[in-house]
Amino acid sequence: MPRFFVESTPAADSIMLTGDDAHHITHVLRMKAGEGLVICDGLGTDYQCTLTEAEGKQVHCRIDARTPSCGEPKTEVTLFMALPKGDKMDFIVQKAVELGASYIVPYAASRCVSRPDGKSLMRKLDRWRKIAKEAAQQCGRGRVPEVRECVSFVEAVQQAAQTEMPLFFYEMERETSVRTALRAHSFANAALMIGPEGGFAEEEARMAQENGLTPVSLGPRILRCETAPLAALTAVLYESGDL
Image (cartoon, rainbow, N blue to C red; front, top):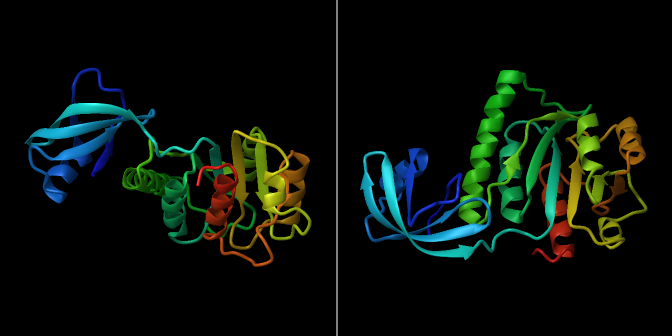
């Protein structure tokens, strides 16, 4: 059933959709009065609705039932992703949202090839946020994961260190596997720090460890920068019982 998000909790027994959502319903899905759809308030409640009227750029829906959203993981995971080349981040954002990431934070590492200027980065952020919303609608999330503004490596480390399970996925780590780290203690939130195509610089690895991040390995194979975050997310959410 088609799914859409609204920015506030409906106060009455009806919901009106406008803008891109209304256009998608009327011109892409070509829905008619009497058809059903799900509208989510982004706060954990799904509204089972029936389309009652579509006029111009507005779509009116009747609320038939309210139910808790079941698509949100219990564990809050923030993905810190070094800026990759080309359009790889589009794929990473889409799949991270599908898997259950709560937040996605792009950051600039010393070996990042991609270094967009301010205007280019804002355009990319707008596109990533749109991709996140579309992915959340498609996979049944109860909220749209936030794609935050790009930060420096130092800022990313500092933010990641505030979580209960801050993991630094380092290709040179040989002793601690992600499984070992995840089973060390229980956690309600986690941070996953993934490097760029060229990997982390040694000084970055030292800084991360000095700030409390745990260096971990994803195994003996070197994963591409678009594969590593998805493998890491899957491991964390599986271990926490969210997959």
